[in-house]
Length: 281
Image (tube, one colour):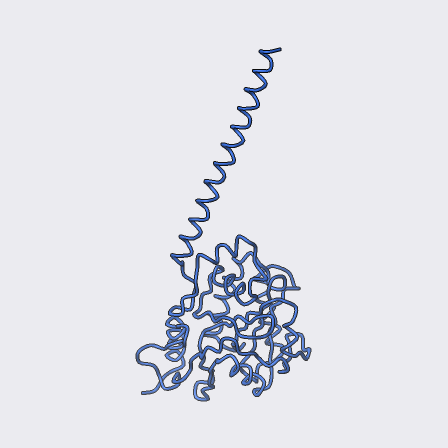
């Protein structure tokens, strides 16, 4: 049975929609081209900071240039000539970033690396420009689009457990839909799967990647009400956390009423003493 380009594209999207924490699973009957195209989580593993890339402006950069200043990094592996899964995935990421109250470059940064060694700086520049125009938060946003030789890209992909393969018959790459949250020390902290990334999941993933160094006290309190569900690769409500938050709020409410009552008693007592003093004078 032969698989046409549209059929493989559909299968890739199906695999993305069926993605789980251990791997992005394909549909029950998947083509041989997708065999082994999974994500193997390597939590805690470090990426090589000495890998060399070329950025969207044609500048030679090291992977380590994007780490070390306390900001977590969202890493995506795509390619710029891809008209199917990559565009859908990056559009989903953009939709989540647009709704996020943080800005790439302030609390975090995004690094997109092309898995196609034939992608050019011009393609990377154009791709970045299109997404930054949509993002609408200025030209200084730190969403970096990189290209590199195959050995550099392959080394990065292997370090984060991201499998992909080029299909010469279809002239396209088969890969999963996943983004990686990297800690400021360039270690893998979290994976998010699929083609949609809700702002809540992005924020919580970044907070965990930064070990709590980003996010307001309210954000951290909300995070305690959610936990990362490995079966779906997303954050879900955490019953115990919600109960704990409810208990804490109840204590605060009772304490608030206590303070109000205490102040009213002090005022009443003061007024009574003043009235008694006037009567005796």
